[in-house]
Length: 469
Ligand SMILES: Cc1cc2nc3c(=O)[nH]c(=O)nc-3n(C[C@H](O)[C@H](O)[C@H](O)COP(=O)(O)OP(=O)(O)OC[C@H]3O[C@@H](n4cnc5c(N)ncnc54)[C@H](O)[C@@H]3O)c2cc1C
Image (cartoon, rainbow, N blue to C red; front, side, top):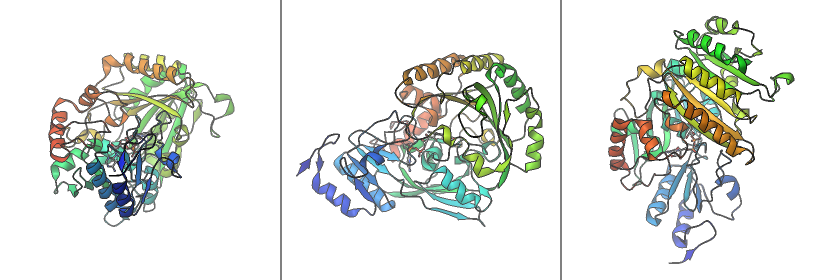
């Protein structure tokens, strides 16, 4: 056997590598190859890893070839869709990245109101393809996030209170298992696996294609943020809490805390000021949305009101500029049942302490259709959560990143008495106990049994890992 070892590489059987290359419709990239640095990078700039092999799959056959090689050569595997894993699980040192980003096919069937979506598609690409027919499925709030990782963890977004999580609209998946088999999973095929992929992340195989149910939406919706100075956070949040108490499912809001960003839509005198914003999206007729927003719009004296009718696609990309590739990101997340006075005080206090101009908090309103699906119907946990915190301590470079991380941890710790569940897609690398907590004991146990069936050797372990029972 000829072996070849370069920096960051495990010794590999050169003949097996050559055979892999020959079998691929896509391409194999190794350290030193053109494009290696571009393709090894992931969204979070604080992650800097050097895989030995990057297989850029063009089709399902490539995914199966890559899996066959990884199994035979005992190479560890990272799976990459959009590359937005906060802890950077879609890359690794020394192993193989199975990169699906070339597989971007999206086929919308407007009559059946369904879409078939390959695993390399990004949210913005999916939204654009569905909105061409006045349709949509719940996706997330930053368009360059991957459909694959977001869906497999659950998928929360602007229209979830009306139409459910992304997984609540998932009809089937095509999935390559650890053994290299291509399976379909749906309510009627491999139903146990279908239960697991709806929240269980990438633990059970490599999904190559998703099939979604779509809904009529837009093209215009009433959406956007309304800003107040952060010192008014307690009164804004108390008003907000009462206002959303009996709001319709069409209305979805995210409270944002940050320093006002330097964007063309933000007046110069506001840039850098600590602000609290309620950002809304009304998934229904524009007139109804305008009516629903009136009370909030007339609360106090907003610094800036950018909430109004706009194309859904414009709203979907609203947060893109705040989360570009390459900055350093650290997130802490938890769910809380309610915004009681204590929680509001914690939010107000920690929001005032934000230092970095790119640090931000997103406090998601949950409920509606998400909460009407049974807790055990999918592997997703926390359907009864009132709110989900996403506390992002960010910096552009390594300078100041430690302080941002400390701030995020302190904020999250202050909320500890009120923590309920945790959204698995907002976990960092926080250890097995946090993953168990995220799923809850019963669901976690069910997931470990499923893992034993579909991935008994835990080949798919670079993820929020569920070890086989
Ligand atoms: C800027 C930003 C905004 C976000 N906004 C939202 C949001 O609005 N709503 C929300 O719900 N989440 C959101 N998230 C969290 C997001 O859902 C997760 O980070 C998700 O894992 C990203 O998916 P990806 O395909 O881009 O990531 P990747 O890093 O490519 O993949 C993440 C993990 O998913 C698994 N995986 C990826 N592709 C496959 C596949 N084809 N088959 C099997 N496993 C696979 C792997 O385990 C991989 O490690 C956001 C994240 C970021 C960074």
